[in-house]
Image (spheres, rainbow, N blue to C red):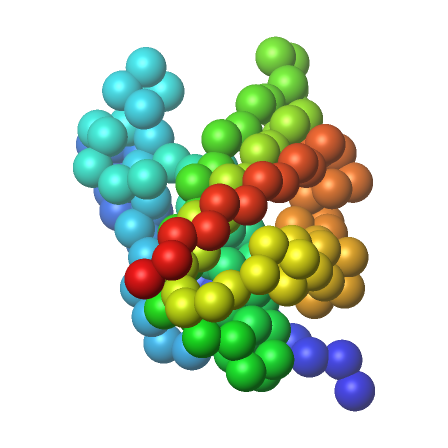
Length: 144
């Protein structure tokens, strides 16, 4: 059976371009547009939430893979930078993900393997975005 996911999006009124999403797991997420598009800049743009969700998905994978491998991971920060197409639809065309992973005795190879497994097998979001965007990664280790 296929896993279903649901989300309800409500426009917050005629005076702007703010929306609130209620996820199937019961959480709320606000989004807004840029002032030049009628928004009030009160929340992230919808495409920023796509990028953030992708980062959350792959960071989750990397930490889980390292923990399951019994690596002493203590922190994981992911910095994403993205470029979008100039014309509509303004899809992501390039995304760079820089992982800063901290722990005791982590090996570069183990962290790079976790990143690769996320992008090749587990992270649905980055695998979808890779259909339009060139995704590159880099890894920085911090010994704690």
